[in-house]
Length: 108
Image 1 (cartoon, helix red, strand yellow):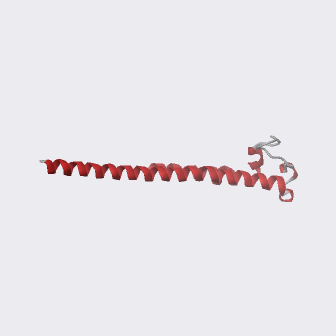
Image 2 (cartoon, rainbow, N blue to C red; image 1 turned 30 degrees about the vertical axis):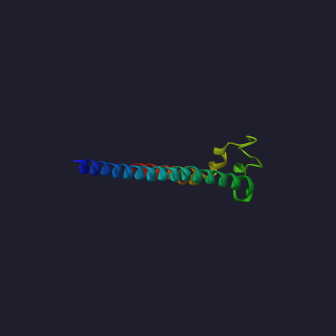
Image 3 (cartoon, rainbow, N blue to C red; image 1 turned 180 degrees about the vertical axis):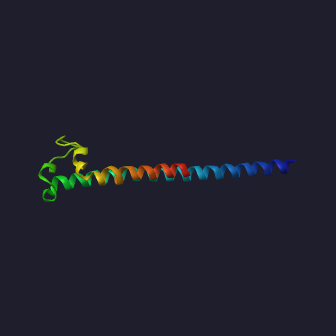
């Protein structure tokens, strides 16, 4: 009788350890995915900002913004700096990572 109880207890402990490990793995996956969800749009927005404020020869004069740091002085909005690059910023850099994130969450 004691052997059966000891065996059942051991099996339950193994199940708990497996469940805890899979839970920790899923938490790690979510953490890494959310980090990339932040990094990709942030890099895209700042790349657009650098291009529109520093490389004036590449754009029409109405799209140029002169020497401003939107994060500090408020000379331009972040969306204004990325408006010229709507094909890059709006879809590829922002929405695609969110779709990937949702698919990964659903797979967990």
